[in-house]
Image (cartoon, rainbow, N blue to C red):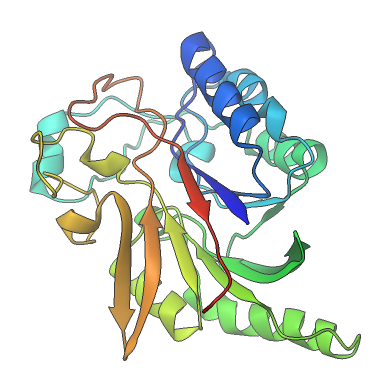
Length: 267
């Protein structure tokens, strides 16, 4: 099964080259499944660009969670402040049209939201139990909501005689340790996150980011690695993202990316 992992587009309406690039990749890969880990909007009119970029994915099953920039617009920041730790929150923000974005994802594209919730779906013959949280960077995550959410979808499938899931997928925007640990404890077979921008500015040929804007180890701020907790190790893919805030329009040593994951049968 081919999975397309999208994150952190931070889309503004004038970013036509980025929109075309995303659309070309989405069309050429022809994925079976899409994971979107949030921060799609970077401007009040960003949804127009998202529509152009994601149009080839209409009808492809997917799941998504919010980043804060799917709810409130970005604000000017001192970029050197990221070296002091995870960023704070500006009191002056512009609310974005989250409902319109969610309606596009769910009704037009056919994706399922995973904001402190769980869902069961079948993709290319693979039974998936997916669960996720809202943006942990804003403390919008509710980890205690996940066990009952998973219980509900499992009970709902049990009386229909459905077999157990082939894949248990954990989805988060910000890959904070508390979230990753809980996902492993809940039986995730694969975890997907974003938020870090891969560090956004990296020393060439270095394996570690300079900053991650969360508490994940810097050498795991981009790409595929393994997250271990309580005796289990789970593949973790953290996307370096498709863009950046319009107020910090620079990436160095860390190109924008779309992750393409090939999921193979165990053994």
